[in-house]
Length: 336
Ligand code: 5GP
Ligand code: MN
Image 1 (cartoon, rainbow, N blue to C red):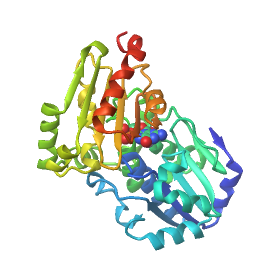
Image 2 (tube, rainbow, N blue to C red):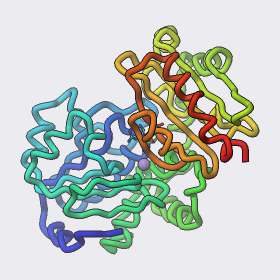
Image 3 (spheres, rainbow, N blue to C red):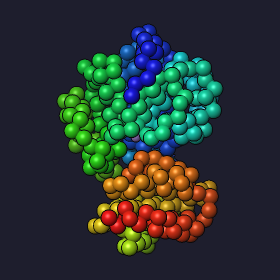
């Protein structure tokens, strides 16, 4: 869906533009932001990417990453850029609260907000919205925005293609999820043709683990994984002490939940982590099992049907018990 396309005329002259994305950016969030950054720069706009927090080290190779302004490191510049912007792009989020500390500055800025996103239930804050919840990644929408909406597909160069490839690859679990349509593969083919070195991107993202992180994976598989066969469900419960023992930060647990889902027959997987200030949940499912409904109803969160997140202020054991107590409600679809 494209709404507010009359505003696109603004781009015919150089503008002050800030690109924002959600807190703790993942591959799609950073890839989409940097791809759009490269393209807008090519078109002579005065453009910056402003993040609320740092990005994980497995993304610390993306073209343009060193130009990114991180609020926690340069708060004055970040807030000035947002206040002075004419256009603020809101990428890979459609609820302003997902920008964490930046929410206030985005809301208060007189800039037009342009949202490009694929999450469900978008808020209505943007003057231009390019939104499709069936898109595999926001990076896919950045591609179609440049190529189809603007008609500038020929301007997609190797840097833009690399960032978009990384975004689509990470949000589709390396082209595995149901969202990976033929259209996605056509776009990927175009990105490789435009100069994305696909093998190198896979290497950067998946072969960049540390020994510590790999040993934590072994520890978590042995000590923190619980399988509940009667509900085809598996969960990891990770305590503060588990994290501290291996010096684990947020990016290090990325992808862990998928190991629980990889057990034959498992249809719902949860990663429940004590992050000290909050218990964070990551849910993944197969088929019709609505992770987003579970997160919204019980854990103050949301997301996609098969991949959602939430949080709780209760203690780890209580959150695990709550999660297990919910399963009977979904017994029919879990055991189908
Ligand atoms: P992850 O499990 O990788 O943290 O998040 C998976 C998806 O769930 C994200 O892409 C996002 O759509 C959604 N999500 C994660 N955490 C939250 C949350 O606290 N609130 C909401 N509304 N959605 C979340
Ligand atoms: Mn995304």
